[in-house]
Image (tube, rainbow, N blue to C red; front, side, top):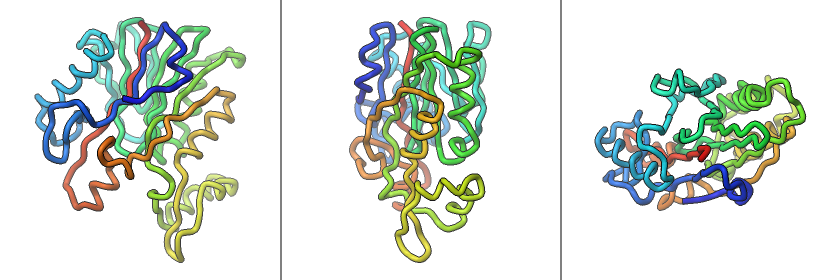
Length: 250
């Protein structure tokens, strides 16, 4: 379990970036796999999510997860859609007692708090979503018409830049959006570059005057702490587990 030093100061919220430890799954999903979209036993995932809600001291029926598709779609969670399927890559709420969750396995989980309006949120920021504006869309949705709002965000465990190899086509996608995106890439060899996803995500938040901190852990490198899509792919496994990061208003 990992925490943001900044978010920890706000007593009206609870949050946590969970590791893969402390759950009931086995094999490649060992042990706290919270990915409903994985091929793990559904009963194990359900029990793992109950472990999470128990540790956070939230009602087991009040944890909300998204169907994540690397989009730039944001949804506000209200009482009216509390029990519905949420198809988005970010969500936020003003409802107390609701635990918002984002699952990741190399992508960036971002947990958000707007102190003035007592609003919490979470973002699933893979490269596709980050490039297509998921971060900006979320902050603008929370901020609405108040540009002076102080919004705090913690950037959680994700793949580290030294382990994020990409090809030239990937690199070109970012340069097509802006030549300034060159700064997030370093040369590895003639065919490969390495990409700093964490820095790319952090800069999108800083551009929006969001106060940020980091839980700076590498999901690929720390195999005992985190699931990793890229590590599972290199090991030729046919699936992978997902870690969960959560935030809620007490």
